[in-house]
Amino acid sequence: MKVVFTGSSVLNILKGSADLSRRALIYKLQGLSFREYLNFFHNYKTGTFSIEQIVNGELSLTDISHPLPLFNDYLKRGYYPFGIENEINLRLGQIIVQTLETDIPQYANMSVVTSRKLKRLLSIIAESVPFKPNLSKIAEMISVSRNSLDDYFSYMEKAGLIGQLRNETTGVRGLGKVDKVYLDNTNLIFNLAGEKSNIGNIRKTFFLNQMRVKNQVLSSKNADFVIKDFTFEIGGKNKQQKQIEKNGRSFIVKDDIEFGYLNVIPLWAFGLNY
Image (cartoon, rainbow, N blue to C red; front, side, top):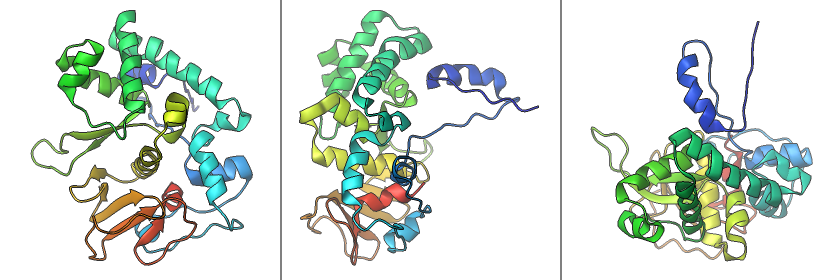
C-alpha cells in the first residue's frame, strides 16, 4: 500500500517530517516554471534544457513564434497553478496573510505582535531593488533585536515567501553569507508591490527563482549571478556588456528580446530549466 499526503503549510509538514524521516519521502513541490506554465495554461509542450544547453542556444519553443507576451503574463500570474482562475491577487493575498499570521507563528511559537513585524519586513523586501540586508537598520525599523532577524529570514524562506542569495565565499562553513534577499517569485512582487514593482528586481527574481531548482546560484562580484563557472548579468534589451568579462563564460541576459545571439540570452529561456 502507498500513501500520499500533502498540506497547505510547508512549515507544518517540515515540523512533522522528523517523525517520518525513516518511513516517508518528503518532496518539495516547486511553483510552475515558465515551461510548465506554457503547458498548464496554454497547452504548449516543450522539453527541459540544462544550463549548458541554454547558454549554448540549444533550445526551442515548439509552435510559439512570439514568447514575450506569454512570458510577461507568466511573471504576473503564472507561478501558482491557481493563477489560471484569474483570481490570483485575492487568493495569493490570502495565502500571504495566512503564512505570516498563522503558519510561521505556529511553527516558531511566535506572538501575534511578532507576526505583524514579519508583515512589515516582507513589505520592506517587496519595495526594495533588490534588498541588501542591513540587519542593524532593519532591526531598528521593525523594532526587533538584530539577532532575531536571521531566524525571521529563515522562516520566511522555508515558507516560500523569500529567496536568499549568498556570495561566492566558500570554506569550512560551506556557502558564504547572504548577499541579497529577493521575494520568492515574481507573482509575489506584483501582489505586494503593485505599481511600485521595479522591473530590474522582477528580472533578477525570475532568474534566481527558476535557476535555483537545479543549480547552485550565487552572487557575483562582477555581475549579478554565478552558476558553476558561468557568469550572468541581467538587464533589459539595451543592457551593455561593460560589467562582464568577454571570456566565453560570461553572458548578458536580456528581457524584452525574443531570441539570443552571441553571448546574449533572452531572459525567458531560463524558464525552461525544469
